[in-house]
Image (cartoon, rainbow, N blue to C red; front, top):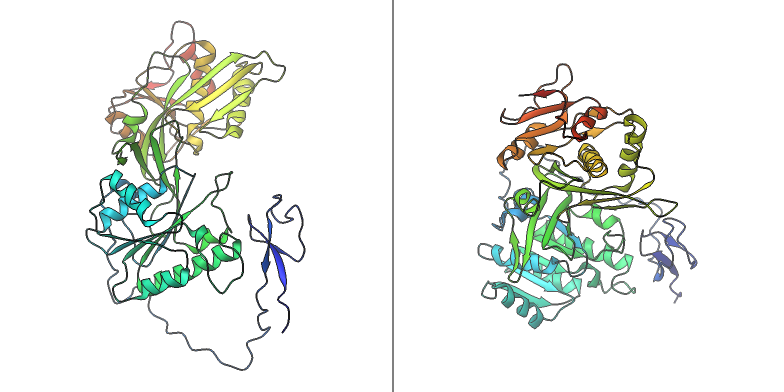
Length: 465
């Protein structure tokens, strides 16, 4: 009998090599190559056997799509695109201890009122899951529990006549397929386990929720192909020092991407936050320099958050730039534009930027709010307490328009703001004025923002009621 050959697979990117090396040549990561048994080589050709002809169907279809399964947790259903689609696979990642298992147990408890639900844990015993359910107040929910790691056993349970409609696998890194010799958590096992579970979900119309561990960089551990195999990828984010938790969709075949759901961690589990803008601005003080309220968009939802900046003289030869919740490269760009186009001297100062509340902002529309907070901190003049700011900044100093301005302005008016500082409308451009309840301050160049921070509190330019 021939001796099985071995290979070395990178646990970060999935690339394979015939020999071990300290560094993966594909992704550049160190000490990620693990020995695995190579699968038998596939035949080079299909031979003379003919395949079965596919039965094509029309795009419109003749039957109605099955209804989505609702958890009645509005924030979770929003991120999933309006509920769970039967036969879909959802991957949920997040830092250890952030609350992934807590969230899914609460979701399953609510879903079990109308669906057959099962929770399979490969990391905890059944009694440990029961203790968490008792703490969350959902111990009486008809959720079926099991502690297992064999994918063969889980698939057999899904294929049974009384199989579940929704099943949670916590976590995919603990599952194994018995026809592979590699250990659970390796690239081959994670890929094969996910493939078998997803195939069973599509065949039986079962919703599969997979919990995934993340690396120190915040990416889901295992091969990148895992995110391509599933239908939806959700990240559960949050700072341990804050009670807020953000469920963010980065991929969704059945809904909008970059949609977020906001939760608050309490003693009784995770509670929904129906109005995240009011929560993020709850501790805001309007008479402090270096703070500006940014009207942002997270998916289809407008969210108002406070951007805080501190500019202080630096005792070091190389001033420090510290950023929390925003892109450090965009901060460097905004600082360069302020110095080159507006004559603002910040280079010799330390700059600290923070998005209050633990939310991470990724859209360029925050450029103008960051610039306002920086200049406010440098001059000591506060941004008007009743003003919201948004707009993208170009390298030539122009303030560029951003999308969904009306939605941002309506959210600001609903929370009691009376002034909006945003990009001027171009010729022929429609919208961008909200419902008319806000005082519009439209800017074409970043330099037009400077009079706001002159001594004595000058009023902004181009004011239009």
